[in-house]
Amino acid sequence: MTESDGHTRASGENFMATAAPTGAAQSSVRATLWILLIVYIFNFIDRQIVNILAEPIAQDLGLSDTQIGLMTGLAFALFYTVLGLPIARYSDRPTTHRPRLIALALATWSAMTALCGVAQNFIQLLVARIGVGVGEAGCTPPAHSLISDLVPPEKRSSALAFYALGIPMGTLLGMLIGGVLADWVGWRRAFLFVGIPGVVLALIVWFVLKEPRRKDSLEVLRQRGTEDVVPFFKAMGKVMRSRAFVLLLCAGSAAAFLAYGKVTWTTIFFQRTHGMTPGEVGFWFGVVNGAAGIAGTVLGGWLADRFGSQNRRHVLTAPAIGMAVAAPIAFLAYQAQSWQMGLILLFVPTLLNSLYYGPTYSAAQGLVPLRSRAIAAAVLLFFQNLIGLGLGPLFFGMLSDWLRPEYGEESVRYVLYGAAFLGLIPAFFFWRCSLRLNDELDKQD
Image 1: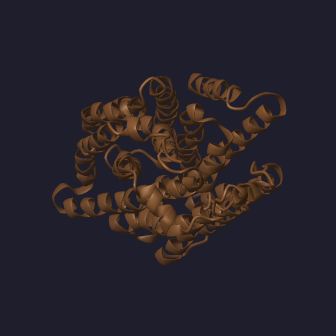
Image 2: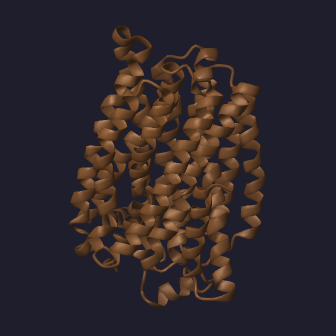
Image 3: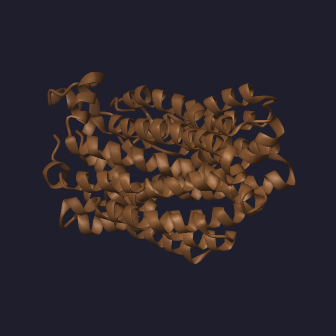
């Protein structure tokens, strides 16, 4: 186990030791958080493996950079975001069994990932990627709602940061596994090998995870005169009436736009500009990106809980400062003449850009009423994934095609130059949102 992995494990253990009271309840929370983390790792393995496989897929099927962007981004994100809202609405119902909803989603996206490996043309691959998006829409909104019900507000940032470790861990494993399999057995079998285990994990989730809502919760709500199910537009109104939440949407969407766009095209950048194979990029970039993402995610959650308990605005101070500092360092990384120096320099901005995961999702849960939490998570994910995952890779791909007549294979490098300094945009919105947190965070009834 690496030092980073040991630090991550220790941080997660320290948090979970205080997340629940004692005994059986504490063990149940610990088990639930670990299982949800594993599910989210599978989520991002299946979501991100297409990035490391994009170049061999493009060469095999004759795809343009725009088609790569469409396949890796918009095809997945459009259905993921649209279906996320009704699934979150269903998840907020007091009678919904959220763990079984997550299990069904996991089985669906895993099966569709495997089907990507048998696609014979661009359209078939696009349809399979849409299927992955349909399945993954049922994961995070109920998971966020579930975690927020299990832990106290003062530990929420660490808990959601722990869950969010699935992003860098899944991305790391997706690159490592995808790159190695692409070199050894080809991109088709790579999809099959990573998709099938998820179906088995879905069975474990179905039978092991418990729904923490009490059976008499519906009766309690009725006695309090509370609606069993908040009408959709009323729930949306409660979510969107928070000005801080709107600013958080802008910040999170801009951050996701750059993160998804850069991770897709940085993997291609190292292959085209530095002549690396998919396996080499998957290993070296995967390790650097994954280790930095894990460290940044853990650190971001800790900083938010540590300083946010003293002053609520500091929940988002680290993401605002981190993204501003990361911009010039990322520019230097893409300018490096050797891939080794480029990767070394990329570690710092990747870590700084990862500080926002836990604080953002935690703030989103604290800015809305209790029974609108899944909707809040879905709204945030809707904008992050439609704008970020949907348009980030596609926009960068279109820009690369536009620059290619002049810059040739170096067109991706110039796209990434611009992407580096666009990080100042989410930094600004995180700062503006932080100014409102003392007035709005954890004040909803």
